[in-house]
Amino acid sequence: MKYCILCAALFSSGCATVFTSFERTSSSAPVEVREGMLQPQRSVTQLLTERLALCGAPTEEQDALLAQNLKPKGEPPANGVDEEKLNALLLASCKPARTPGVLNQLLAELTAAGTWPEEYAAFFDLLISGQRAYASVEKVYVDLEKAYVDLKHEHEKTIQGLSEIEAQIELQTVNSVP
Image (cartoon, rainbow, N blue to C red; front, side, top):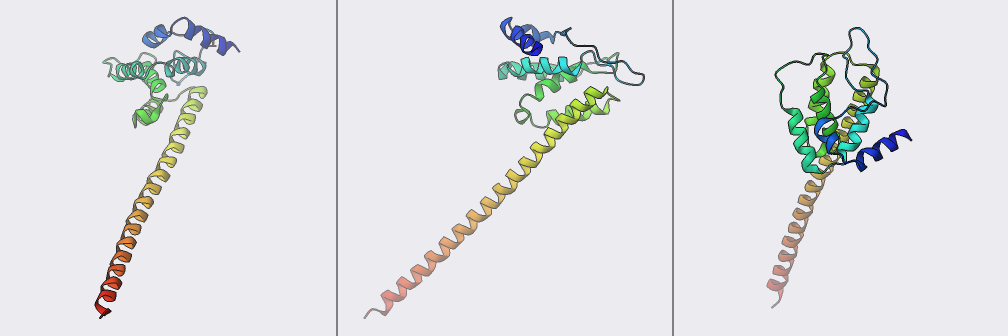
């Protein structure tokens, strides 16, 4: 229920502040700090809340923010977590088909950055599983499209062959009439 209230507050107060600055919400517990792990500034709950607001933004605004967050930054992140890449991941996950390859690239880069807290690892696994499912569906679609084109070609060849047989029969009929 508190997430619904938070989302309603974000949308009713104007989402522009969330879109331009990725303001942090303080309603969730901070990510647990463990030795040897990356230390993101936000919990996955906060990320998902931000994603909900971002995915509701107009497409042009999403594209502009994605481009802005994908620009390489000169300095490496202090805590080992590239927050801009996380922001870009949120945006790319809104409509992955609109930004082909970007979500996969970001997931690969973020997961290779080091050891993430369990909630982040689970979040990344969920996105990776979704991408695999999408890739499977896309492969089936491409295979079906190829089969359709092959069948259509065979159908056209059959019609052409029948037309040729029909023409030969008609020619024989005309030639056999005295």
